[in-house]
Length: 209
Image 1 (cartoon, one colour):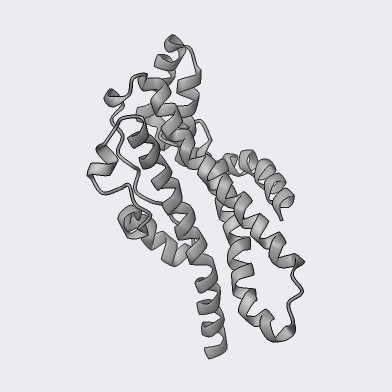
Image 2 (cartoon, rainbow, N blue to C red):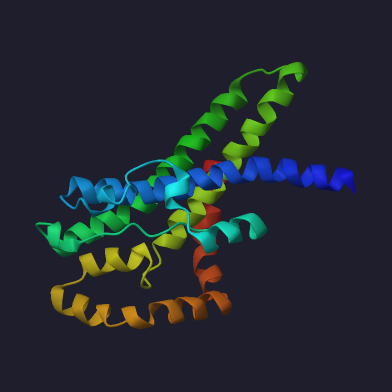
């Protein structure tokens, strides 16, 4: 029993840090981009930081502890500060998934560099946890990036699609927002999201690892 508990603690220790980094970097990217485009709302609320405690959602944190996957609090954005509101919202939304893809690529590059090093058995036990963290970093960041570009409100992908559509079509599309969470839950429960996400996720993870 103690061996099983110790194994779970070790597994938890290598999985949670890369997930916290992925979630925190995602939200920080939203806040940073909004601030650069003229919206100080997130900065004024202390969200322009890489401190994970500022970004974690209580329910998302519990899910993180029990299911080893969680989510963070959405960054507040006021589109009225932007010179071009729809375009501004699109870039703020896109910043999160792009940051996750960048982290996935960076983690994969470090993994390859480590793989090229000839590490002796005496040093490998020090490097092994880092290797596992980097592998989980690739996986988590790819999954977060792909999930967040699904064009269903309130996910980032809906803001990106809205920014790309002509104004009339964007206005019609925005009427889905009140029903977005219900629609998203239905897609998750029916596993339709899995079928959509699995091919690009598997492709990217295979490419990077």
